[in-house]
Structures are given as C-alpha cells and as structure tokens.
Image: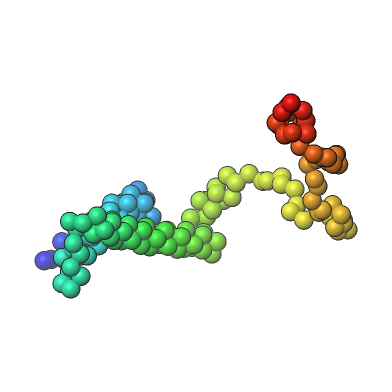
Length: 163
C-alpha cells in the first residue's frame, strides 16, 4: 500500500468518525440498541440456565418455567442497569467537557441561554421557627356527644320494638 493510499484511507476513517460523532454519538447508540441488548441478554441467561451443565432446570413444570422467567428478567434488568450507569457517566462526561471549555463553547452558551430562570420560593421559610405552626390540625373540631345507649330502632327490648 502506498503512502497516498494510506493517507486517503486515514482521511476516510476520520471523516466517517466525524460523521458518527456529529450524527450518531455513543449515547444515542446505547439508547437505541440498549433494549434490544437487554432482551438478548435475558434470552441468553434463560438459555444458559437451561443448558448449562449441572443446573438441570426442568422447564416442563410450572416452577421451572417461572424460574426461567426470573432468569430472563434478571439478565434483562442487569443489562438495563448497566445501560443506565453508562448513560449517567456519559452525561457527566459531557457536562465536564462543556464546563472545562474543551467542548463547543457555542453549545455551552446555547444550553445556558435555553434554561429559563426559575422563580421558586425558598425551601426554608425566613424568620424565627414556631413549632406551633407544625402541630397537626384535626379535621373535626366539634367535640363528640356522648352516646347513652343503642340508637333508636335497633330492635332491642329497651326501645319498645319488641312489644
């Protein structure tokens, strides 16, 4: 291979890499293919539980089928947890890249301009603390009237219904 061919190949690879970085960054690949990989991982976990020597998972019974389903769910959930962990790390990487100035400064300025200021009240009230304000209030403030016996018309001998 000549030097000119190597230069053309290097330029093509760098152009393709720039295209992927701008149009299909790694976080989008993980988001698009993460659920598919999770389903495949669950299926592989179920297959291994059935065919791995020494496990002898009998799928002909209901308990075996439930165990296989649990294996599938564990494999898929572990994969989704790893996907979430990777995406959280990617977001931290992007935030560090823009805050340190190694990223696109126009992007950082646009992101800061796009965030509207919030006018939320402070979480802690100002002034002196009054514990009486934190006391629970009752819904019914009318005192209950004492009941002297069974309600009228219950069929007891004292209300005259038996006579």
